[in-house]
Image 1: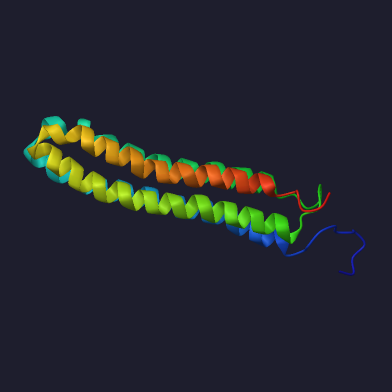
Image 2 (image 1 turned 120 degrees about the horizontal axis):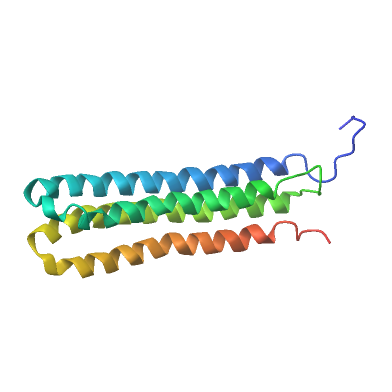
Length: 166
């Protein structure tokens, strides 16, 4: 780099950090969108026969929507940690942010798929047998926990950035 302002750190490192922020948001929102769409189809189908159960059956749609918020949280944490002009930003930091975003994003994507499938089948089954509601909610909670694990690991990995050089 033949410029007058000295850059301390690796020039390509912020690329990996920004990809991590984008991955967290994009994959989490893909999971949220899939879960919302798949559950919404089940709610609409069930609502034709049992319209009084529609509001009770919105739970999977809300749970799927939360997944996008997890990705947003990690994306904001990562993007605020990337400021190479204020503090040196090395490849270790970029890789830490990339892994943080991928952990949260892919966990959110898989949780969204699980929520969508369980939500679709669960609300239809609940329309026929109301005793299945508690079981459906428990399965949805465990599916949502997968994304929460990704969020926790993403926060831990993101906090590792900046620790490469003392």
